[in-house]
Image (tube, rainbow, N blue to C red; front, side, top):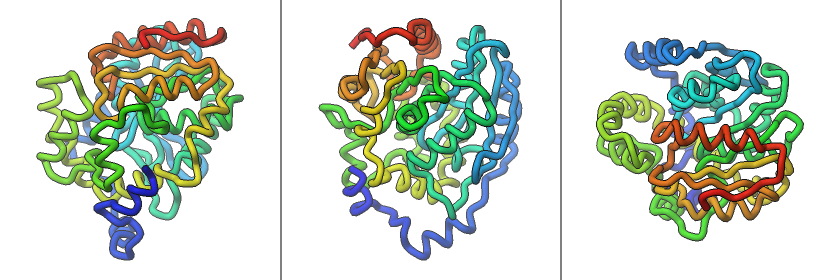
Length: 322
């Protein structure tokens, strides 16, 4: 898919004009989004922090039980650490919870001079865990964050207690989704430019949400439209032809959970079985009636699945619901 997307992509990120746009790009600082990022973590008992990790100033939120085992949550493409705000208090009763904006996303600044492939992002996250968390974590990655989490687990198992790949990017299933077919032909619904495209995106990634989705769409549209060129570059880097996720995931030897929403329209649920077969001893859990973002659509169900896995993580993997 990476090769076909690069050949057929609507936006060519290699042109001089595109590169000039990236160099001129600056983060959007409107009052509404700034207030949301500053106030919403406090409402769920989280604090906003930042540290330098290799070549990036990394923004993150932290909360939960200070003396609990640490859990590190990685968001998906085009998203941010705020995706975890509903789930964080549920698992924070027993665990220390940390959720960063991945380098290039959210409040962690984008730099047009560096790469954001799975390998580079995995190195940044491994360094963050080692230097700033200070002990092995339960790593959870959603979508793109799942692809990154899988590479961390393969290359840096010493910094992890377990890894959860939630509707994770990386290994195609037996049935490609409509989104995957469109990406292969160069069209990417995850990078909207108009309000109508943003509305379609929300419907694509969320099987549940209703009125909340409608209220969030205008705010999300403003942010996503502003990041249009940046997100094209980030997606281009993510499809790194030098990294084969299947080979990477096959090297995972720590406890692994493959967690998937049954109604995922972005990455088909058949990917879960494929991924679970690739990872030795992996546990597989399918969440009924849930789409691409379980932590937002079904936080209680997701919290139960995660905590059940972490309780048995030191043992051999098993299969549940799939």
